[in-house]
Image 1 (cartoon, rainbow, N blue to C red):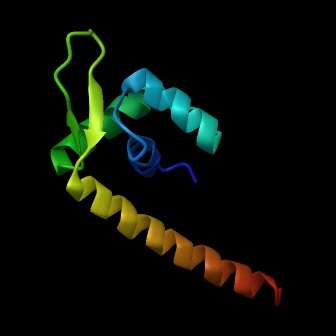
Image 2: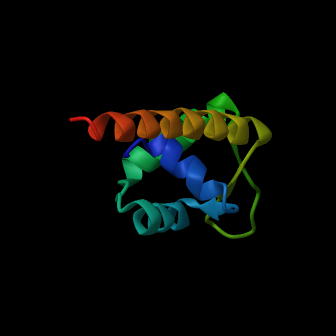
Length: 95
């Protein structure tokens, strides 16, 4: 699973984080190293969709948090992935 959108949303579901912290978290839980361009491109798209929001900070690093809309999207996508996994596992028993 290497979809940067879902990986970033899953990271932010655990709490607000700035970009570098998201990169480290994704690498830790998914084993996927997101490049800066991939990460910030995904962040820009998710902000435009209203799935995440940047938080003002005194620090130069800008944290992001998941919105209610982003949470719903992540829930929908993980439910679809769960269904795919269950179907695939069932079919693999017969392969």
